[in-house]
Length: 117
Length: 503
Image (cartoon, rainbow over all chains, first blue to last red; front, side, top):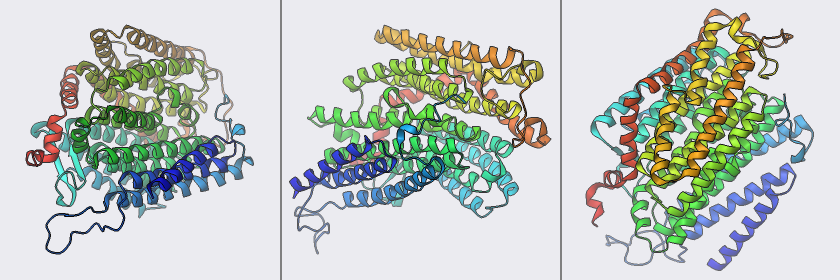
């Protein structure tokens, strides 16, 4: 299970970085989304995966007697997903606006901020 | 009780949302709320100054489990300084911001931005810090794109993509921290990281944090988004960005690298090298530019280098110099962009080749503008001077002579840039620029609006003068902050409570 997750995280990061290095704006935002998801899965993995143990203390017990699933990483990932979703949707709208105004998808042509004005 | 400034800014922003189209009401309310917010920050500052570190555990969960809010001297000082520049920007934008921007919620977003900043300064939980960072950057995205000019959109695209990347890296760093220690409370993490045997992994984690915060605070190899985007929005927005956003990255670095990764020598060496290169590239970049907004943008980068230099040397004197410089820099950089905004309103351009004759036409305003410009250079006894003295002294102690060379070079480059700016904009004979039909010029504005634009510059200049002439008070303050930062045991004990130290 962990090996599988590690491979997926590696692929997401590699794919995200590859997409970021492309010249297209749309590929850049896809790269950022992939990287964000990779980071979320990484938190999930580093919070230690446990199979078949609930994060609940059994009846009549005061502390966990057994191995338990840590609920904190799930809360973190959930928060991170929500925040990431908001930011990514903003970025997508922004890219659409930039495309409408500048009529180009090529990042190399976005250099009017560097010109002398 | 500590969260009062945050809650207040949230309430202020929400109330302002109800007056969506009524811009006059919004202006008045925003200034009022900013003044009250400043009052609350002063009260909190005095409280912490008297009583030491104060803690609020949210939901009354004991420390390592719930989210703690910690008001130590450093945090409340930052809250106070951010309230001051928030007030100045609020007044300035009431005078200068165009109606079409105000109608799309400029003021509510400004208050949400300040809420995010103050939350970040007061939180004691690393994941909560991430959440506040996101609050800040989403507000800054909106402020940056508001108005939707072509250049603004382009600058925003660069800013947004690099900030998203930095956020992902920050999140990965948090994942590593949680994997290593099983905790998110910064005080708890500090203890657990200290006991960890695998120092290599700690260094790697701190490296990830350095890159993530480095992108946000624009240090050497990661600064290119800043000069590309900071001159595109209206000057009022640039002012709050310049004063507070990059400094938030510096704050986070100071906090994590003193508390959690205290005194990692390897990272310290890297930071010293990065600081030197940041100073050099920022200074040289500023020298080449002709647009005033871009010149100031590069100067931000240059002076971020001084702040990193102090953190890299990592002695009590160096941290003290950094804190002093941080307080001075927030005030002066906010003021600088407001000055450039005023010059833009008077002349209709920010190109220093076309500008001129400011001193002849507006002698009093010019003298006023001289205060932030020359505080930035650090001409004694203005405010920048003291901070640099401490940094150089710290460098002599740790024998980083090359770094001292770069600090002196950076000051010299700043002096050169400001002198060039002064002679081009203020002393050179001006030519009559063709008036643009669309723009509203300073001379056409109403008396109230003119005062609203000049007053915040007076306010912040007075504070800079105070930092310069009343330096002994600020030195006492930064001394106390640096003592607290260098010896975090007081912070850790206050957050966790002494009982939880021995489980």
